[in-house]
Length: 266
Image (spheres, rainbow, N blue to C red):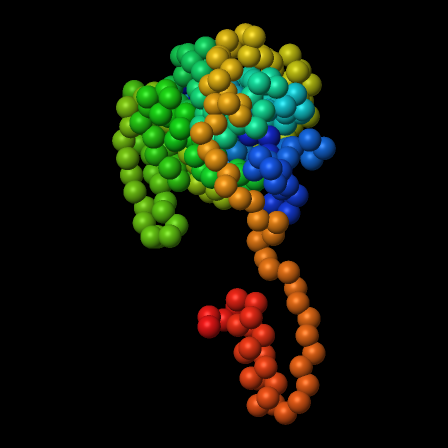
């Protein structure tokens, strides 16, 4: 079987995420990127399926040119080949425009796929949208939060776990299909140097010149998401005050201060 794994070059730590206050877009220039850690769960599940049923695993990523280093590490894990779709026209895309580019790249360069696998979410955007949206563009059945897959002929039996409800569910999907993998459900295997030796020769880099998408459908132009406001911080600024006097008077003053700054309702 042929498995496509969708991979994002993400900001590895949420503390390093920066947002342009004017556009609401993530700032990636000058920020080190790496393969989104939850996508490695997706890669590991895909490689387990390859080990069990045979076939091929292809990683597909829309990223800046620096994304090639992350794809090399995935080949070091055992991925057979990778496709990096990169173009300035794709910059500042939301999940809708990103999923459109990824779907069109899969259609053109891996048309004979059996399964599309995505991570649950990314460490920077954390929307969990892209897997479902790619499934929409490719007209595929889709299941979230998958931790195990068994292939039976032209069908896949997938098991998923809903953390909030504590419920396990089983679905049978006709192939081709798409899934996203529950984060922390896999233990990604180590990168082997021997696998990476010819990694660059197994990575295909394409731009919009080759993909041929209308510019109004990609990047910022193709992104319907509107960021109305960007908060400078998720947390209120720290305030200091010294309240002196009798305990009853200090407590009364403290309540007044908390009401003034909006912590307590009036």
